[in-house]
Image (cartoon, rainbow, N blue to C red; front, top):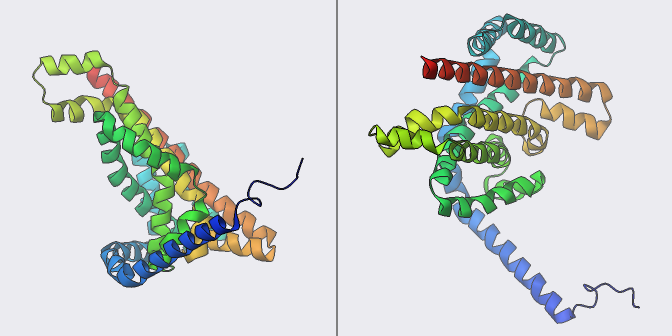
Length: 299
């Protein structure tokens, strides 16, 4: 039996056709990026301005003020002194080891990415939950977004917009948004139909059922999606640093290329600290919200 693969036996003419098609598509995308890249980039100028402003706000504000605001937000969300004290200790250690500025850059990027993912993802999830047709169209796209290697996202974005904050932000959102969309859809679909029928019997409109019944009951599942989106966004930080996104990812990338073990370890631990803070705070807020809804329902 011949050891030649099927590909090597593929007719040379047909292989040449495939190469020609590939070159044509590459050329067309290059022409598109040259023609419309500047126009598309200008559409993101307001977002870039906000991102730069927010980053500078965190960097230029006194670290005690930033730490106090962060601790206050953590306590308001969790009502836990232990978690708030842990945040103070962890962030103080980050500052002590000289990683405060990069942590603030990463925090600003993750915060903006998460906000955009929520604003875009929840409405898409609601549309999927209310229409089987929309679900059939969107689900394969989410499958592709979740299975495509993260590096692949960078290629078309960098060709179109160059390197910098906005290409990194777009790549992070594409990578991180599927969980919030999927779990919003799942949470709304899992709402008990008898509860919806009761709401309808009381004269609730479709919008009232969505805002007053479905979304509150689906909130724990939606919060789980938001939590996963934050974790995936943090996981993308190192990869996004390859296209000029400043933050904790760049020292990690530097440590990989230069074999700086301690530098990579410390900055990696700082990313872990951010992940744990976001995780614990979002879980605590979701639990408090669910408990409040339960008390309201029993009341």
